[in-house]
Length: 238
Image 1 (cartoon, rainbow, N blue to C red):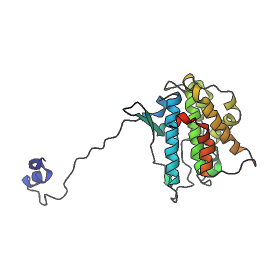
Image 2 (cartoon, helix red, strand yellow):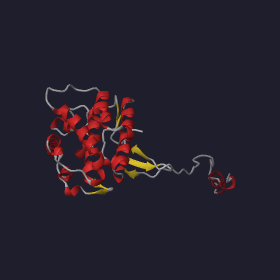
Image 3 (cartoon, helix red, strand yellow):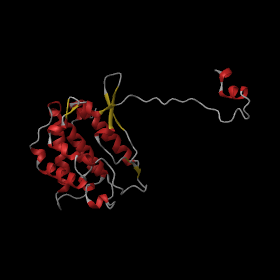
């Protein structure tokens, strides 16, 4: 096809030696249009969020560690049948299980695990584990339930907006306060009220891990099941 106008023929016509060398092929990369997961509300959001949780865990078990779970990296698209599908993007900060980045402190501060918002972690002395990404998923779920209403950011009306304005150590203090007291009284947005109990259950399961000397360190599968899986209704998993 289009042999008469091929790059090789044009190069020959111009008297360029080695006309076959350095031929160019025009390529176009086509991507599916993705939308931020924050555009969804209620059960649609929760189902897409859960799909990404499952995808992330499958990758983690295969040795691919994302390490930057945040709302901006959770996207969705809609199928022809009307179903929303969750997509995890931006693996720029990811690492392989045996790679050199296992203890490098990476992530988006407001959504990072409390263990990673410490001086030791900042200095690279804390190994990044699955539970840290699992915790980030819970912070994302919590954040969206409180700070988004019908796909619009309303976080400036809430105390959570302060998490965006402080450094890692101060953010750890604010998030710890929220985890152990603030979560009990804060009100979700109207469009996420129906799934707020899921977020609260996830937060409670996660909080128990931070009670000294009471809960042993969990294996990855136990974290996936007890922090996340058991708190999501079956209808949001289908």
